[in-house]
Length: 234
Length: 234
DNA sequence: ATTAAGACTTAGTTTGTCCTAATTATTTCG
DNA sequence: CGAAATAATTAGGACAAACTAAGTCTTAAT
Image (cartoon, rainbow over all chains, first blue to last red; front, top):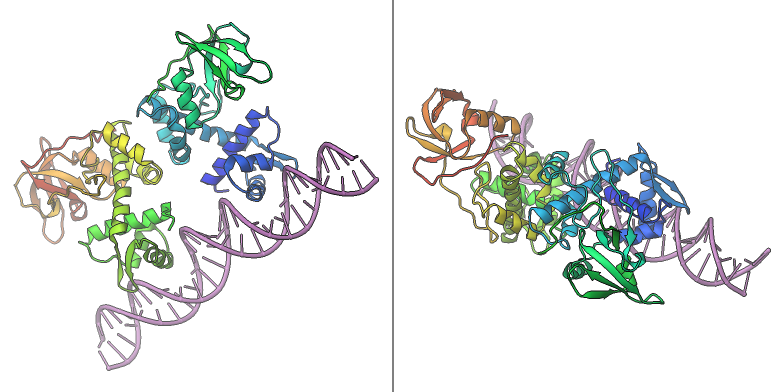
């Protein structure tokens, strides 16, 4: 199996969907949607991945797909590349945090192990990227703190933004304007009923109202937990 | 025409062969050799490039190929990427000058215009890369000083190494050991007859003997010409 | 228990890039 | 000049990765 760019994209997507679904097998359709590809193409690729040597996925027709240990290793390698590149672009080359994803998505497939190592070194072996996503180490271990979405955080208890899920630049730019970036202290003021907006106050600012959907993408840890510092501006 | 990675490689190779041959049309065979591909594949690709819209090359069967203005523009764009990446890896990420080529060869196809600009900025818009190769600006202009190969330089007249052609890491490592890197002052001591070795002295070192072939890859300008400084070590 | 809707797969094509083998064009030299 | 050597092209195919269209499986509602 030539572990091509396409193969790497599939493995990464399967890993991430599996993660979002607590380890459940990933459906053909959700993979197709994630990759922007017809589902027939996904079926074809899954068959190839499953019959590769070494086998990269466990694929049961009509029942979804999961990564094999080999596939997981390969996926984490790509994710490490991606997140190191994001961190480097943000911290050294002055990209804002909404710009890094697209560039990293292309470069992740093309850097050598030597470059991976130099980037990690230049950054002091960071544990998270600019969005708070954990960066696997070379063995594939990653630190995944217990987090709670802002949408479900108890009222009036201080929290620190740990991580933002999703990479849409517009959303990220808006959150940066509000100061809702990893490391910030926030307090939830209240949740309107029937799926209404959540009100939250960022340290030293007016409270703002967030849609439930957006509030679900902001993952929090209790204030007092390990601090983080990053640059998310332009 | 989807200007794919492959197409970019062809255009770059045509540009470089044309340059080495003083603008002569490039033969199918030399292209095939340069790209490590069968000549039948080259013929096929040239036909595609010639009938693309806009046309990228001027191709006359059995008579070779040259770049169209559009093709030249595209080739210089890739070469700019390549040389900026090489410079950045060498000067910022601590690569030695023999390591940069392979990495740049992959990355050149995948960086955005935004990244190109940030690299150029971080480096202070350099005019040459670690091998002394000129870096085109965004409009495709490049500064190409008049150079003479060390093999043909007059005896006992001081010169400055301007540029090293060829990217074989072993050769580059050897030249770095000798101190034969861009910016160094050298004096040619003598040329043995019948294509024998050339003897040259690097400032403050013992004279060394170089094969004609190697001495042909070291391009010189008269001492007193514009200085250059770079880091070529590990 | 049946059936319609939706999810999934199969089959057949397309595009891009490469290959080998066979053929044709050009050049060189006895 | 014509034959041998060299260079280039055509022909025919392979493979990866995508697509569309058509058919099959699953599920869940009646």
